[in-house]
Image (cartoon, rainbow, N blue to C red):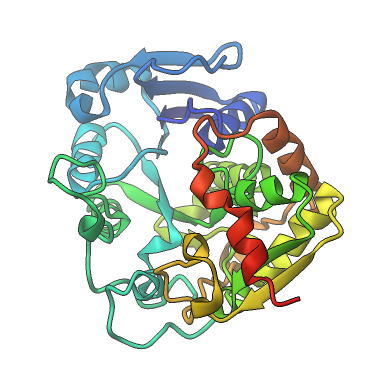
Length: 338
């Protein structure tokens, strides 16, 4: 299969997908900016260019005669429109990497929706956010990349094209080696600093969010790229069960060899630096049965092994910039009711 992959050289999900596709014998060409030093597998071709000027490379794409295009870096509606315009008449199918932030519950978490939560677990047919552009309230000016970010219009453009089949993969909170968001770091740092307790807001301790280990998520994407049954289908990707935040921190602790305690407190009893504006009454738990039933997907790496690998990587690669205010242990000691 001939595949054009847009983005994916940042060392996390996309990089693994490229490696797996190449290892399975596919002809892969990666379109990226050339700003990262990721070493691509032997035989993988590169086209360097600006994602915002995709049309300028149309003839190069056409000469490749790809079967499938995977867009790993689709953020704005205009990018989706350009994508479909460039590859219409060239490619049979587009696989769009999306996010579970499209669901109504994400808008509720941010306080931008006023309706009721989705029924859990949220299926691919669940209610989407009615308020678009979820981060506009957090940016100062329109030039900020978050201003026009929204996966919902991207999905609509891809799935409603009359000539190209679409596949949408809604990814979970993805963790593992290479995670630039350092999702487990705030907890691991406390564990490695010898803290014998970690504080959470009562509501957050109970809150659940579907996660996925990067290697397993990459496997799901590869499966959807290769299987024509994924045409015109949308899939949730993630682990089959969603731990509560308290259980998640405890699982990290187990992988890290930590024997401390997770303590939950009312929000007004927490130190200021641990209080979150998120409305934790709304779980982000999705149903992943469709991709399992239709494509035969299952995790190859257990959560236990995944967290051990993540802990090891995080210890070797902590964030470059660490805000000391977020680790005010004196305030946390004062709040501990034990």
